[in-house]
Amino acid sequence: MNQNLDNEILWYEDNPWINAKHFLMRWPFVNTQRHAYAYKIARENVRGALKNYLKKNEIQLQKALIAPCGVDGDQDVLKGLSRVFYGIDISQKAIELCTPKIKKKVGDIIKSGYESGFFDAVASLLFFHHLPEEQFASYLREFYRILNNEGLLFILEPSRLYPLSRLMSLGRMVFGNISGLVPDEAPIYPSKLSSALVNAGFEVELLQSVSFSHVRIPLPIQKVINSLPKAVLRTPAIREMGWMVLWICKKP
Image (cartoon, rainbow, N blue to C red; front, side, top):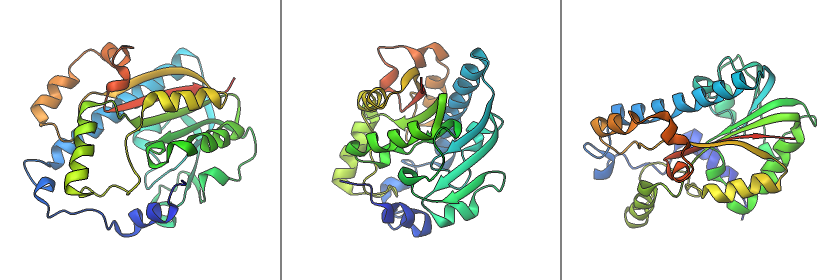
């Protein structure tokens, strides 16, 4: 099974899967402030982890690819971490809306067209959970090809081991896809992506959760969860059970 690229494009053009009138898409089940806070904390933790890694290893990125780049190029996470950013996305609309500070193009990531060894880093945030597991290897091979030696790969994905992920999957089975997800979209098992990374030739330099909170959790409880020490995010026994998991990998 391959990724349905038409569905990915349609999501940008006119998302037909969201049902804003459903009772589970209204207060108290959904709250924009709660949603924004959950993502803000998770993405701040991603940025912090990337900055710490680059500083610790005295790395200054020159050319980094954002794949896919979406409408904002993940600049809330990546801004300033590379001298030049490139972006690729299957959606023409996303490319048109994306910040002009990125050298961007419309294209299929798996056939990126970039030269071998061209990039110091590739950032692929919240992408692999749109793919069937059997396609992980193909995309990782392309990332490996376009990275130079010692090049870095940054991946962020929702974990299927997160307790609420299982509850959300059950809710989707009962009520249907009401929250606007692309039909094939689903959290992944971190161990399967880690295995695919190693098989593709990457070394996993860092693996950690970036949040144990979630957009559906009431704001006061989110704040309590997020007050836990940052070391908890890196604890081996539970780091794959977070809402989202971050990988920093290297091409040796």
